[in-house]
Length: 610
Image (cartoon, rainbow, N blue to C red):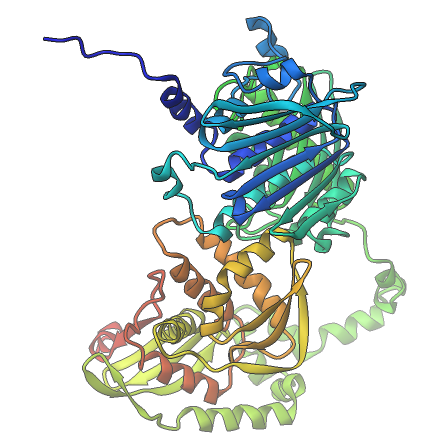
């Protein structure tokens, strides 16, 4: 039999290797931005077209390259940062493997213009499919421009796996934010299809965070600053009220390199114990500086996963630093054992309790009711507080209760429950959360939020499947300004939002004009509704089994459903009940939570021994 093992041609080997580093346009953005930072640039511009599929270009004012270096930088494993194996454990630069430019050149058409500091003439190189097509002198300003065009032009199968432009743009924005956040002393800009998305002037870390994450954090950041012999930790965490349902605004950097670490994230979450809800996530941007000898960053092609030589000590330092910051800024709950100063001056405290006052107090029927054994339950009959209800609620409130009682026993319209027509009669709202409803077989207990979520979900589902919902026009159109990543996401969702009743128009600079909203959105709360919807959408986005449209429908239903704890009128409760049992699936929310539970009359009789 003939031999079957052979060496791959260089261009195929390069394309396979490139797949580990360049998975999408955002991968190239990360590598090119990090190279610009390593070059000592103070001004970095990122230009993209067609979400990076047509063009990713980075222009910097760094130290540039000589003609020889410009040619060598596209060779695999060509690097200026490592000479021996020990150097791997003293890395302080962003890039070091020498794979980035070689990988980009293997799967795209690349144009490089660069000039070395002090030279009068620069170098221009064109590379395609790892082959140099042109090299010549060029007049160029300080630094380097590298343009990656037509990503995966020579691997069409991989190009087909790229997502929509809006999805790819979101990945690019994420990578841009991570690099720009780590280097607030560098100017960064991002331009997409001729429109500038970011323009980040040099400044402090806090200024950069607000530029990237939005003005809402301006007064809600707590400074973290701890220095030890082993490591230094600095950065910011958000106050507890900024906690969200998603992990979006969470950033860890080690020696200015963005990393992902569930272990360190747990340390921060632990520091926030009992200050935020269990299903919420705090905002943080924390930077850890430590000797490179204590970590290994060469464990993953994207260098986002690292290993510490002592994870436990890093965990302890992070948790302690965050706890200390929150305590220092009086964020953590504290018990105050001091008596309120205003109470100190009341007569009950300041004046002596005389024998005369003691005698008057002990002779009252109220005192007797509470001091005589087994008498407390006779308080209303024996004491002079028979009319305490009138004192507490007032006659007007009593009349209102009577009116409500009369209303709640008004029979409701018949609705379809399964295959049987049943008369549902609203009895009462309990704890402003549950609705008691009588039917022919016993009674039901509805959870108002779950029920409304099901109603809205089916309403919106019908809207996107051919019955567009009505739009409530805004009398005074509001303008909502979003963080760039959220603006890109909202742009992606606009077509489906239009079908369910939202009328939004881009207004430039990451803002939108709200011309109209669905009827369920209260006038004046349009901005809040959109912000919460986006937050919930990102929360659902962690579940990949749902389509984009399904995530949106569930997000809208959850966000706009009447929340537990909201008082409802009898008319509102009745409408909710009727709408629920008109649904195709009335018994559960889209997520499978029950909307009601039933109590049959025979079961009730049995409970009472009848």
